[in-house]
Length: 332
Ligand code: HEC
Ligand code: HEC
Image 1 (cartoon, rainbow, N blue to C red):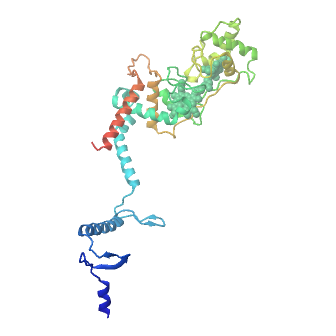
Image 2 (cartoon, rainbow, N blue to C red):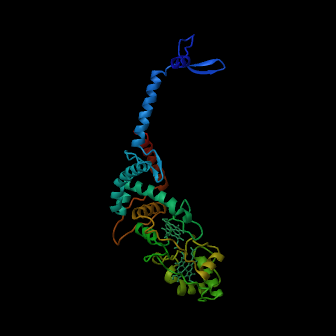
């Protein structure tokens, strides 16, 4: 009886001579063909491979993350590896750059390019908000592209301005406060008008009727900081008033406002926020960009190569860097 039943199940298809599975749909019967051998092997291999994968790689989610895998692989590790690689390649320059003097940096094309590229990118990230992306400044924020420097344009001067800031929250900050001559009633409105007219005449403005009166006030009240000739003083951060470059505007109204209320612009200190190498790179970058001044000691000839076109140098460096990146990513 049992045998009979079994024989009924294992019905053999007449046409193909193959057993059926006993499943039938509207007269169509399913043949019990064996699976192709090649297919079966691939199937077994994938099972074995998946078991291996579970063991070696992070695979199963757990409450605290995922199983770690014995291979110790994570994408974080992979990223850290590639960063280590980049840092190792930078280190070749950084080690030299860190100890090199400014003169050595300017004289060595590789270090110079390294400084310019690093400075340009640090400038975009940290300084462009105030000084403009081309470093050309705006009202109250000095243009760093020209050779008119309020606090000095030698490399060490620029580095100090960046490191310690100006009227900033740093113990060594550059500081100098012009009195608010009007607000604090040091001069009358009429005296301020006279001295303003005198100041404007220094940079080619019309000579006012009360020139002498203005000149006297200037010598008494202003010359200590701005110099007898009005050409300014970098030790005190007092701008040159005899050129046509104005930080706060050179029309009569703006100059009156500068004298009446004083201005006292604030430049943040970057020490502690940027590392020493970045500040050094920025100094070289701005020095080149701004027609930097050369530090001359008495009786000494200074020969510092100031490159013709710093912007072209930066572009060239950026091209080289992308070429380098292309080569490393394509494994050449
Ligand atoms: C919050 C706005 C602000 C930011 C950000 C800023 N600066 Fe300044 N910076 C100023 C102001 C304002 C002055 C002018 C201060 C004064 O009145 O003497 C100045 C002055 C300077 C000077 C001196 C210029 C001279 O003629 O002597 C240098 C150099 C300078 N900045 C570089 C930088 C660099 C490099 C960065 C980025 C790391 C930067 N600044 C970021 C506002 C800023
Ligand atoms: C204690 C030093 C000091 C004295 C004295 C002083 N100044 Fe100034 N003056 C400065 C400093 C520093 C600045 C720059 C302020 C800033 O950068 O925010 C300045 C800025 C100015 C400016 C703005 C320049 C610009 O480029 O926009 C004018 C104008 C000016 N002073 C005129 C005068 C006149 C006129 C007197 C005399 C009545 C005078 N100052 C006295 C230190 C001084």
